[in-house]
Amino acid sequence: MEIFTHAETWLALLTLTFFEVVLGIDNIIFISIVSNKLPIEHRARTRNIGLLLAMGVRILLLLTITWVMKFTEPLFFVPHWISEHGFMSGKDIILIFGGLFLIAKSTREINHEMEGEDDLDTENTGKKANVTNVIVQIILLDVIFSFDSILTAVGLTKEIFIMIIAVVLSIGIMMIFSGRISEFIHKHPSMEVLALGFLILIGFMIFLEGLGKDIPKGYIYFAVVFSMMIEMVNIRARTKRKKAKEEFHE
Image (tube, rainbow, N blue to C red):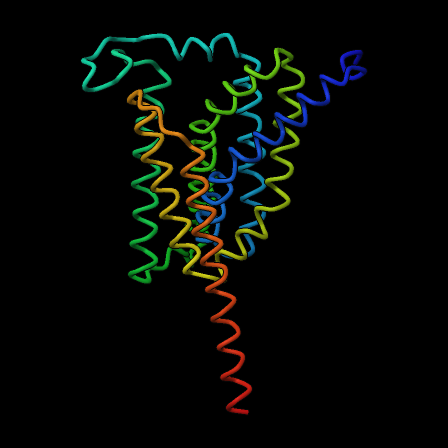
């Protein structure tokens, strides 16, 4: 506990927690979208279970940080036109398949949204299967995104204990806000489609990162935030027009 008497410790903790939350924004959006496919009484519980299990996985990865860092070592060599590194590591393979999974899943959800398909099951067994499926997806996606957060954490501090506290705090923040984000996305289908488009973009970025391409994430996140702000203005404008029409007919 002596480390908490140093200002550098608190600065590292706050910085790490901030980065964990920022890097988890796309994770929260994904969780909100997939949990909205469940019956309303299962959504909050499923989100919390998925996030808690994901937190456990992330802490386990931090505790085995030496083993995780080996994932960046070459497994086999490939031509430079395939990967700019000239080799494939365990991390690269996970990012490639993770990016493809995110692209495929988001594309499928957009198709469901456009076609008006309903994923909710009326059978109790169907609900249980859906809940399990959503939790597994949350954990898998968190493992994919964990590599960025872990490598960022290692660059900011060498104290595993500080990293774990930052993970717990960030997951707690996600649990607090995921319900509100989920409700907002469910209420506004246009925002859901925009968010899914954002996840496709993130998936493509992860895929390219697995191929050794250095994609500045700041530009992508800025474009996404700007697009969402414009859509929120559109939602507010549509709400005002709808309210004005209702008052006119009255």
